[in-house]
Image (cartoon, rainbow, N blue to C red):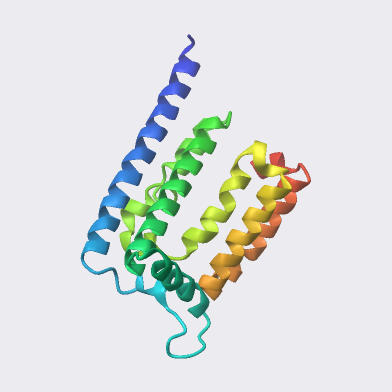
Length: 193
């Protein structure tokens, strides 16, 4: 086995190990936050509802409360479960997609930087915001086997719609999503890297 192959395998293993640690630590921090009654905006923003009248983000919270009522689960615990699942999905998908890329040196440095995987370590307060839904919308676009699927495109758009209903600020990520969808649907994704 060549040194280049060994080095690549070490980087890939390190990236997978880092993602597992980040998911574990992030979800431990999330569990502590939920156990203390939730954060002032980390979970509370997800629970804004229509109880006091029409409000921009209210429909998302209404859906959480309806799900809680239907299942008997606490809305706070539902939000925590959604946040934990989305965090694990996004982190593991980014790590897996970067491991599968051939030019893993650049991806390793990018993904292991404080702005991607380590973001959740550096900013627990900001890690559980509704932007998680936008990040989740991009997940199918990371994998070639889903990039040209109409079902994957529908999932991407529905997840993004949920993100915008949850927080109107997510609309500002529409150009990035449109650009990425266009490139992967037309087979021009190679120009993105």
